[in-house]
Amino acid sequence: MIERPKSGRAIIKQDFNRLSIEIPAKQNWFVIIFLCIWLCGWYMGEVNAISMLSATDTTLLANAFTVFWLTGWTVGGLWVFTTLLWTLSGKEIISVQGPVLTIQQVVFGIGRKKQYDIQSIKNIKVISQPDEGAWDNSKSASFMNSTGIIQFDYGMKNISFSRSIDEVEGRMIVEKLKANSNFNKDNFA
Image 1: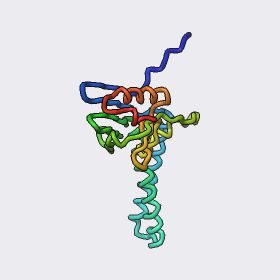
Image 2: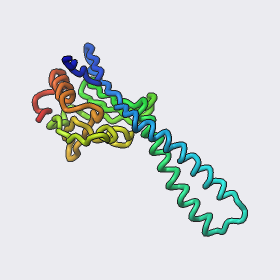
Image 3: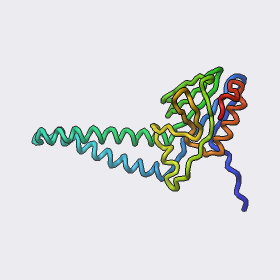
Image 4: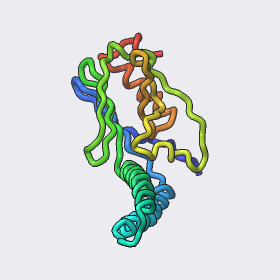
């Protein structure tokens, strides 16, 4: 049986004066199930630590350690919860409107948005990323991770986006950017 070609993850919309590329986060069901189970254990640890703080027979040193531990545990749990939300419903939205390239990372419509002056963008290119096996898309699972397959120079800073796609789809997106009238040959590597 002949394997069908992959259609890609990006949803590209082009109208008269705007290009919009939406890239949903990769969904690795092993990671999703693991994080859900981990959060159940995290919740038990959180509840147990809070109940230890409310006990009247604990020493001041034990309470200080518990507060320190609880702070780290809470931050870790929030990071895992955010990663789970990103994996389930996160997306990157890359848009070009006029002289501005906008890159957004959103979960349920909430997230961060950065805008770049297209005239200051140089060396847009697709980079190769080595295959990392079973945990390959765990690098794209975190909402905090900003490494992507498409990169460009912006002043003295390197910006990357499109972390949930592979190299071939990245080249197709770069071709769409090249075809956009807001870019010129000086923007590309």
